[in-house]
Image (cartoon, rainbow, N blue to C red; front, side, top):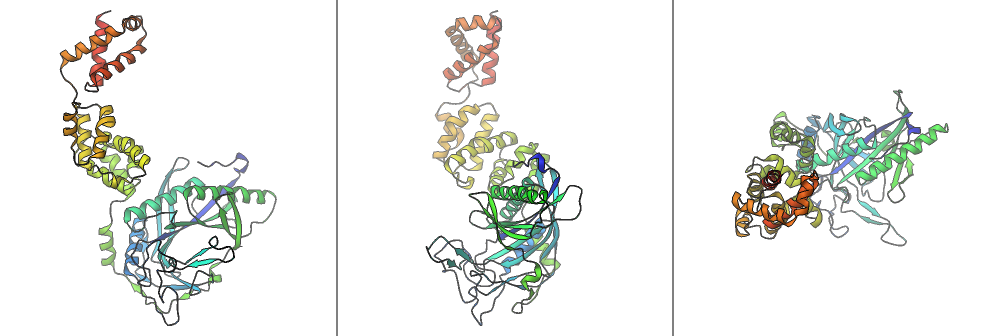
Length: 489
């Protein structure tokens, strides 16, 4: 967590975010060009995405569906009448010289996103609007020594822009908000939310005011931040920069800024544009889009269970801790895998521990996603049940059985355990004999125990489990060893 020096505590940080979400459609928003990431430069283009004279846009209906899904998931009201507008500005990677977007009548408005942080607890951050628009191309300045190169594959790729109200008050809250949006779009299946590839980008509007003031200060917009860490770094830097200027009695110029991830410093790109700078006017080549209540209801019915709903269900119905529920609901694939596991085990806590422990460790080590793990959830549930029923120790399950299952996904846990003779012994006579062997190995330590040095019990347990090769229940072994020691006193 990024901290702010105490000397700056007289100022309140005010943040509003514009999150740009690239949609996972097959084609672009206004043409049949491929919207896939990558490809040879300028290979996913046509006369429409190039904006050539006489070409006309036509709307991808999937974009409407995805916009409504996100609007419902963020508690927005959905506008039944939708119109597109032209936003006029010129960049080399904007072929037409204008962007088709929504200004006067966005598809979603007046919602909220609930976030949770250590510093502020649970808060609702208001959503001003969500609108549909097309992406621009990409300028590359490091591919040639003398020229900038333009790749228009991205031009026309569908975007949703989610604009918050200036309700965020810290870098931590801003990161939590973007993280929640990323989770939502992934669970909804409308975007992969990959910030590194530009599928999810963020502009941060940052201003300061004295604590207790109600009037907003002049804001600066940091453009295209591509990671949660850099978002927090950019906000923290701007807080300090603007506070220093205000302390010196200087004026905050309303600017658009670039954030350098290497130096951690912002620098001006241009003066901040106002809405009238873009000369918005209705897009003449696209008809209004009129939605019906029936359509909204159908989209509502198609929504999956969302992260916060899953987290609350895990807590209320499964009795999991807030920590465990939060981890399991953070990624759709993890939640899906866990949901399959608990269809065949009722030891929900143990299942959660396996996901956050051995499974997560393996995924981190290999860089693998859980959907490629290879172990069927029902097979892992069988292994969990063997441990829960006292037939197998957790340590043996993790160190000996789990690796075998990873190598051969077809083998069932019980078959492996039986074949390797790993089932916990319930023969108390054998266990008693083993206890005697262990205590006879360390007569001096037995004397120490009887004199009150109880810490040596760990030595006895370690040797016992080693000799039993993990086929004895640790709790039972502990009781037997203590009982034998106490008897001889």
